Image (cartoon, one colour):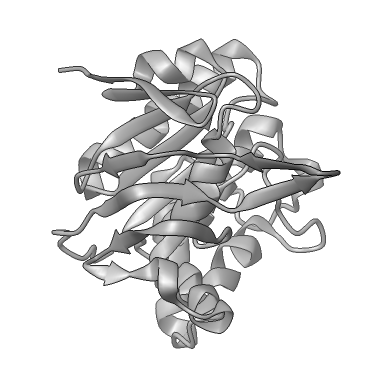
Length: 236
């Protein structure tokens, strides 16, 4: 499998403020005055209590939510000003997503779940098969490509989700609570796998988490509180 050289990183500059949520007569700003630069190839966790703004921050980087002010740059492109259709295309081509509940299509096999994201890009059937089989082997699912999600364990389903996120060679993988539905041993195995993928391919991984184990695995930990940065810790 050929992986693109990456010299790009997401940058949030501003000060950046997230879209306001209307609750009765109260306006709530989920993020306030946030400035963040994430280097290419980082393995970073965004942590904080419920309501701290971490989900909003992930959704902004993922081109899902909308800003009040500031800008978001990925690969030198100001993605925060893209139209809804342009954001959809950007997500499809440039971003990978890993979810707490795996979000696999139950009627599709492991192979078909992974291949589907490439089909959306109009890639030839031959290349789809080659890339899908290669990434399934990399994540430890060789021989399981014809199993549907219901015949896979939680850890195996998350491996399919990781393969689906990586097969299109994204510049960033956004992982939302990727260990939340796994026991501690399986969760650790999944984190080790993502760490290997990060180091092998240089893919930027950004986690949103409450899980201390995920925080401990991260080489950088950003902690949010009440929509503002509380700390930003880098580790060797």
